[in-house]
Length: 371
Image (cartoon, rainbow, N blue to C red; front, side):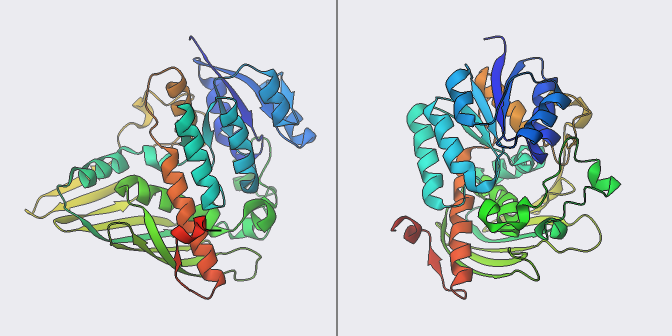
C-alpha cells in the first residue's frame, strides 16, 4: 500500500482548518472525497483544496468509494450515526470530539471497532504532546504509587460561539477560517448537545483519562448557562474506579489571556503537575527528585506535515490525529489517541449533564446503561 485512501465527512470549520490541509499536504495520503450536507459549504471547501469528488450524502460516499479510512467532523449529535456507518464499512477513523453525546453510543462504537479490528483515533491533539506521554509513562509505571486525587481546571473563552457569533468579521478570528467558520452550531443544543462540556471539558477529560487509564464511576455536577442556551461554567466531582476523586472545573467565559488547562495528579509517592496550554510540567518524586517536562519536536518533528497547516504548532498539534490515521492505515504506528478515552470522557460528561439537571444529584455511570 503506497498511499492511504482517506475521505473527510464534514467540511466545516475544523476540517478545513486542520484535517483537510494536513491530508492534502501528506504525500502518503490520497484525499479521495469530501462530504457535507450543505452544498454551498461543500463546494467552497472542494474548490479551496482542489478536491474533485464530493457528496452531500455520506452514505453515497461510503457506497461508491474505495477507502481505507475517514475523518469524521460533523455536528456532535451526528457523530454516532456517521461513525457507526463507517465502522460497518470497515474503515479506521479520526473521530472529532466529543466522541458521542451518550455513554451507550460510545460503548457501541468501541465494541464495534474491537470486533472488526478497527481503530478510532480521538481528535485530542494534546494527547500527542511528549510532555503528556512522559507523564503517562511515569504514572502507569507505578513509581508514584496509587492515584489519590486529581485537580483538572480548563479555562477558555468560546463565549461568543455559545452566543451564536463566530466573529467571522473579526480579522483575527477570520484568519482561522480558511473556508468557513463554525457559525452558530455551538450555541445550538440540538446539534452540539451541551456547551463548555462538549466543546472544551471533553479535552481536559480526555487528557485525564489518557494519563491515568482510570474509569469514572459516579459524578456530581453543577452547571451555569449564564445568558445562553448551553452550559458555560461547569463544576464536577468524579469518583474513579480505583476510589480516588477528581475535581473537574471549567469556564468558557474567561476574559484576558489565553486560558489555562492545568492538571495535577496526586499519588502515594509523588505528584504530577502539567500546564497543557504551555506544554510543560513537573514530576515530583518521593525521594526528592524533580523532573522537568518540556515539549519536544516542533519544527523538527517528522510528523510536521505542511508547516503552514493552521494549528500545527508544537503546543497544539492539530494536524497529528490525521497523521496518526494515515500511519495506522500504512502500519507505521499504533493508535496514539485511542477511542476508549473518548468513551470514558463521554461517560463522565453524560453523567455530569444528568447530575446538573437533577440539582447535583450523584449519577452513577452504571445507571447510564440501565435504560
